[in-house]
Length: 244
View: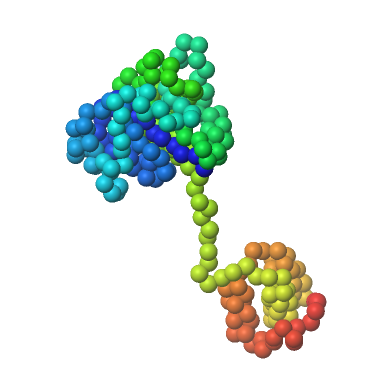
């Protein structure tokens, strides 16, 4: 997997920069580079507040004097702007995600994701140095994005989250033999508790429909077998008929 470098060009808001540090912690890994910032920005209480929860947030950032320096090691450079730029193509972010993911699949790739100043964005000169320009669509009610929000949208869109596997602490999926044992046990015991033939037939059909196909775990089987034993069943696998 290639690497991502978030480049903030001449940012002014210490809280915004702190929130970018936090976004990178949420959706990283990503290098963070600040171009042309006042060093006092990193000492401001708002920077600390914005990066809350990140250990040593200042150490997560490197500083470059020029955008050219920040882009030097990168193989692909992408600028985020809502303004049209002469004859440059401005790609919508939803259409840019998959191509960027493909680029990042190359382990040798180093992609710069470049964001401009909170008030003025990227200049024409900044954009001239970038290989791609991308626009993050918004509602017409508010067409500009907060800097930290824009970085979060982009990093979140490129984030490959590890699959979250839901594990039961007590259960595992039933295998076919266990499912059949449960189904036959239920069918052998429950209908005998019903005196009406039509209701007995309905219950038998319901057991077949539900327990032949429903997702079942070992803990489900244990609970049903215990219920059947509480109802008086003493049957084990060898006592049940092969079919009803």
